[in-house]
Amino acid sequence: MWIGTGQLRTRPFPIPTPSNPVSVSVVIIALNEEQRVGDCLDSVLELTDDIVVVDAESRDRTREICRAKGARVFERRWSGFSDQKNFGNAQARHQWILSLDADERVTPELAASIRREFAQGRLSRAAYSIRFRNYYGEREVRFGAWNPEWHVRLFDRGMYDWNTDEVHEGLRGMEGCVSGRLQGCIHHLTVNSRDELAAKTRRYSELFAVKLRRGGRVPGWAKVWLNPAWRFSRDFFLRLGVLDGAAGWAIAWEAARYTHLKYWRALPERPPRRPIEWLAPVAVATVLGALVYVMPANAFRGFSTDAESAARNAAQISDPNRTAGSLALLDADDDDRLSTLPDDDDDVLT
Image 1 (cartoon, rainbow, N blue to C red):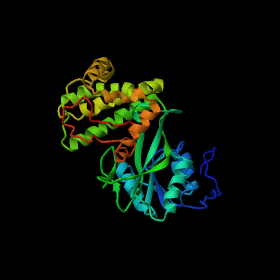
Image 2: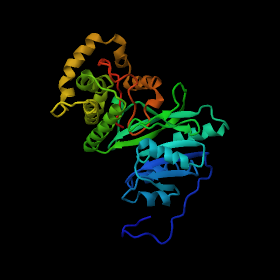
Image 3: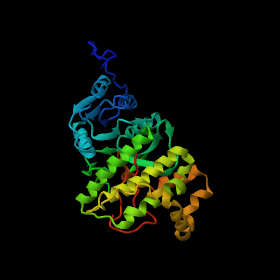
C-alpha cells in the first residue's frame, strides 16, 4: 500500500478475514480505480473469503489497494468487458460468482439477502438479479431511464458466462431462464459530471456501431434521425426524468445523443457531414404531439399514480438480463426495422 510520500510501507497490512463467509466469489474488473475500488471491496469483505480483481494495467494505486484488502489481483491487458469478466470467473475458487465493477457497492441489505439464499443449502435459482440505484455525482437518480434498473450479477458460473459483445455484455444461456430477485441493492456511482457522461456517450456509441457493423446490421434512416427524438421525449417526460432536474435533463439529452451517434456511426457510407447531435431536443415538441395522437391511453397510466409506484410497476416487467454491465441492454428487435414509436432500443448509459 502506498503512503503520502510515494514509498511502499515496509510492513504489510493485516489481511481481514470474514467471520462467516458465503461460498461465493466476488469478481471485480478495474482500471485506474484507486479512488473508488476501496469502498467497493469494503462492501463485500464480510461476505466472502474470495475476492478476485482483474486489473487492466492500471497506472495508479489500484492493485496495491486491492491486495491490502485481501483481494487476489490479476494484471491483464484490457480485452473487453466480457473477456475480462470471464477471465476473472475462471480464477474464482467458488462455483457462484457475484460480479461487480469498481464503482459499485453492495448494501448490507443485499449482503444479508445473499446470506439467506445460501443458508438454505441449495439455491432455488441458477441466477439472481439485483436492483441498481444509480448516482449522477452525489445525487441519486430516481426517475427517467436510469430507474428502475436490474442486472443479473449473482450466478452459477457452471451454467452461465459473459457473451463476447463489445458492449451490452450479458450472460449466455439466460434465454428462457427465470432468475430470482434479491432484496437490497447495489449503489452505482455512474458518473461524476456532465463531461464524464458525454465522454461515455462518445466511447460507447462507437463500440456499439462496431458491434452492429460486425453483425451486418444496417440501421434505417428512422433509427438515425427519429429515434433520438423519441428517446429524449420518453426519458425526460414519460418516464418523469424532468423530476430529477438538471441531472434528468443531462441524462435524457445524452441518451438521445447516444442513440443518434451509435446508428449514424454504423452506416456503411456516412454522409460527408457531422452527425446532428442537437436533433433530439429540437424535435421533442413534434414527437410529443404525435405521441398524444397515436399512443393508447394506458401509455400514460403512470401519471395517475405517484411516481414511485409507477417505477415499481415498471420494475416488475423489466428483463433482468438485459442490463448487465457498464452499459445495459441490446435491442431485442432487429435494428433494420423502421419502427420509431415506440422506440425498440433502450440502451442505458450507466
